[in-house]
Length: 290
Image (cartoon, rainbow, N blue to C red; front, side, top):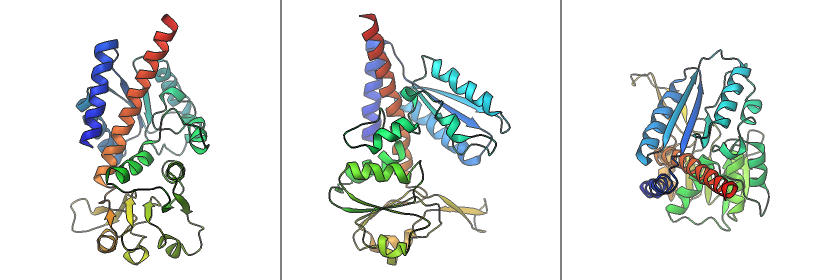
C-alpha cells in the first residue's frame, strides 16, 4: 500500500501545483455506529497522508430522507468536493438505493451508481471509476504475483458492494467465475475446485480448511463479531474463512479482520478515485475555457 500511497501523493502534488486544484473527499455518516467511527478516522489519516481535503458530514440517526438527499445535492454542487462517500448501511427508514442514485456520477467514488455498475458489467465498457474493495481484492492478488487469467475463481456472496462487482472484475480479468450464495447447493464442493477464493458472505468462519484446495489463494473480506469473554469488548472479529485452518492449506491468505491490507488498499483507492475526479474536473474546465 506504500506504493499506491506514493503514487497518489505525487498526483495530488501535480494537481495542486499546476492547476491550484486540491482534491476533496466528503463522507456522509448517519447515526453513531462504532465501526463507522473507526472507518472515518482511518479515512482522515489516509487523506492527510496524501494531502487531500477531507470533509465529514455527520447527521443524526433520525435524519429524514429528504434532508439527507439535500445534503448529497449540496455536495454534488460543491466544486471543492470531487468524491462523495455515503457510509452504509443507512438507518431502516431511509431508502438506500434512492439516496445512492442521487450522488453525481462524476463524484461516485464508491461506484454504487447503477450507471457505473452497468458499465462495469458490459464487455468493452469502462465505468468512470472502479469499485474500491473489489479493485482492492484484485490489486492484492496482482501485487502478490498471483495471476488471474484462466483461473477458477469462486466468489462467496453476491452483495452489490462486494460480491457482484468482484465477480465482474474477475470476469474482466479473464477468470472462470462462479458465484456461491445462500441458495447454492453444496457450496463446499464448488469452493474446493477454486484456485482463487474471495469470501464476502457475512458468515463467521463458514469456510473450513477442508473446503480449500491446497495452494489456493484466499481473500477474506468478511468481518463478523463473535462473542469472546476473554476480550474487554466482549467480542472479537473473525472473517468468513477459518483463518487458522486455511493457513495450513492455502498458498496465500489475507489475515482477518478484513485483511488489514485490504481495508487500507480499498481506502487508498477511494482516494485515488477522488483524485481522478479532480483531474476530470480540471479537464472539463480547461475544455470549456479554451
